[in-house]
Figure (cartoon, rainbow, N blue to C red):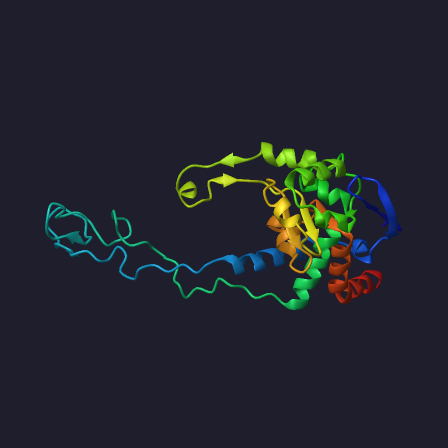
Length: 271
């Protein structure tokens, strides 16, 4: 772990060097990050419920043996008389092993475990090997971890922000996201999930002075407050090492929130 970390301004120049935050010296446990990510992911899911009589609301009955037909219920009237119904292998029949609305999808996660996993995820953003392993293009990035002055939070135009990200060396990673956009057909496109976009850089701010609106239209770039940042943002898919831009005050706010847990982790590491 290095002793000093540079802080850059919007022109890419080093304004000052600060003592390396202790959180970036924590040994990263990828298994815990992966577990907590999927526990938190269940909080976004909506329970599924189906019509209790789906596939069963047919006037059908078994005709009996001796007719040279399989023993399944068959429609009694109309043009479809004799057509198999109700059973799961029949057209329009019930589904086997259907998900019930009573199924418990929401998985609880311990507060301590959640905070420790968040600390690990923050620490992973400062490990160059993990960031590169995740697939980000970091050859031109000025430094990892990448800390910028609070002037970044005051940018209110997308064009200005794009120029700043280019100076900081994030443009190749944004281009990687643009080139990887895929379109899927079928049911996913009907339901608004036809466009698949990879994850690009993450911007963490302390106070929104225009940065949120400036960054929301850049494909692949996510922007989140230091109060809300979690494993879901720092390790999408449960894979740590997302390329993250920290404003100086945002990083201090996150460190202060996680300090009791980071202190325990460092004691455990030394022990």
